[in-house]
Image (tube, rainbow, N blue to C red; front, side):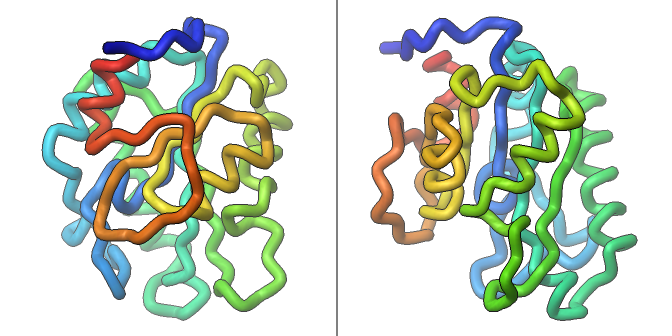
Length: 179
């Protein structure tokens, strides 16, 4: 079984981070690169999956910075570690966008708001949201994609969700096999 969305090198992939790429710390935060653990099979799957797309962006809500549990520098170190590991395994990440504000602030960056995707499109004008896929594990991820007209993929985790995505998978490996 596969999906036939006509995916080619003109498409863009948007990925949430925690729960999709790495193990999510439920009720907590990945505060430094020593706590960053790729989900089983994720790094190998990203090596294959990301090369099917023109651009791959990580769009992640990271209120640990807003809570002052970590600094922007520490967050950037985590993301550098992540992207280097993905690149060394044959994958690619065009850019990482992080929303570091608190949930209760009037943030335009935090998903499900669209600002991170609009910033990606401004920097990379060839990004077409109708030829984009958002992969996440929360309702805010799926809403983010839907608001922009993207295809949406939910990766099942401990997180309870109610938004209906286009497809549901257990892992990036399973998504790669469908595409």
